[in-house]
Image (cartoon, rainbow, N blue to C red; front, side, top):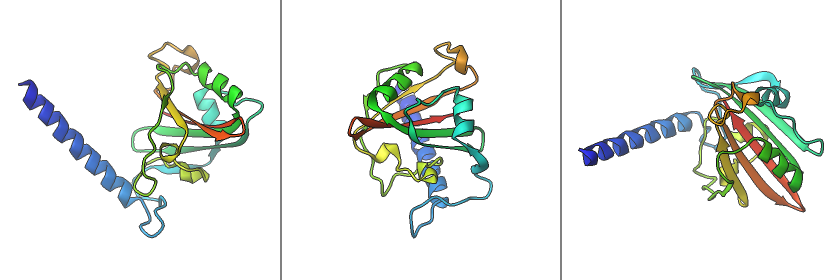
Amino acid sequence: MTRTNSLTNRITSAVVTVLLGLSAAACTDSSSGTPKACSGGPVWVEGQGSTEAAGFMRVQTPTSATDVKGAVQSGFQDTTYLISFTAPTADAETFIADLRPEEALRANTPRDSKTYTTITPWSHLGLPEPETEQRVRTASVCPPCIKDERRATVQSITIFIQDIGDGRARVYLKAF
């Protein structure tokens, strides 16, 4: 029985992965590989950026932060908030520690930038996908799970931090 359930889970997972891939491919311009608008799919909310994303996540970017970018995407079921900035590595690490990740940041194995797709692309902000970059560490946090009352309405925050050299780091946060 366990073997049957395992096979069923693998098949279900494969089907979902294929469907998500097809959905993402349908929303990509085949000539340039950049995301395009799809009817009925997620849409970027005009006029909402880093201020709204930081407000939703209840974070304050470090005073040393530069190149702060953000966006809000209204999706099928959830609204997704993106915020990214660069800062001295020490300030970025302090900022990340305040999010109280459930696990230590771990090295991210870069994915192929030519084939990697996502429904909420960082390219909307003119940034590369952190999953495709070198020297990136990642973690996640579920604020309600760790009883972080400051962020009780935030379901999940995915964290990426990239060493960009010269003692600086780029922080990427994606939350819903």
